[in-house]
Length: 443
Image (cartoon, rainbow, N blue to C red):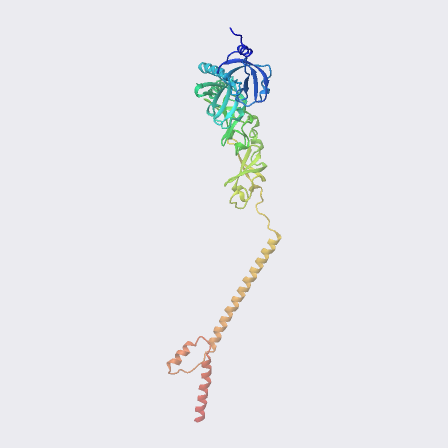
């Protein structure tokens, strides 16, 4: 029997290893991206950062020289004469066994969220990964999932297929079950009139939904204040803490209110706002038929358009504006319906006195009018007198002429009976007298 060489003896002192084998190794050197392990083989083992964890980390922060790790052999010779090792794959295999057991037993697991993916969350359980789709994260769809990063959440495994790397978790069913249990417990202890603390979950046009610890109650817009609320979003936002009281419970619906009786401004309204009382308030809002005036926080009174001024007002905005402070008198109070009517007109004088300028102008206008009428009457009388005189003169001046046989001259005379003589007649008269004088001389 031949003696063995030193190398042969050295080789015999090392164990034989195979791909896929699980073995123990001792860390002899650590750097940021890899660690060197003594695995009892003739070559050292190399554990890279990628094979230690799925999350990029600095190995010097998690491994120290002298640590013993259970690893899996990937390759006996990685090409450089060293053994390629993996820590995460062995951990994943162990984790799969754990996840399989939890899946079969419908066990509730609790683990940290290590990554936010496009379609959901990635949760790590003892080295294994579980994917929770966004639709199964909560009982309501959440578009932004960043708030879950690094948080521990509870879930159950609903699908397990490690060969296809498909391990699905469900958190939604746990949230629903938890809420149902809390809701049942809440309804067993609450009653109408109870004062409850809550957190605003959402605000809509008609009110706000408030989580009162197990169930959501509706705070309707009409129950937010004794006064009028135009927009609930100006009063509340999600996350606000609010103290309310339960106004009504109908099956699983809860109606909330902030109109506590001790803050009711209408409690002594019949005394404070009796008919005849003069009040000061601010115009809160306007409509076509009038303006609503806040005469006390939570108390609005109607100033009808016909009661704004003594003159005709087409619409309230012609005389008033929002926020304007006015003084008015209460003319009606309806205690049953909490309605108050105001009047500004009643405080105004019956007739506003005219100014001196207007009086002088008016007097002058009257004087001018009288003078004009007098002058016109005098002119009319003068014209009438002149007309009568002209008519008399015309009658006296008519010539007493002898009738002639010529019908044309008779017609001309008829035409000129009511008028003065024409120039032609005046020339004809001397001609006739001339003829007569000539005939007399001839005789």
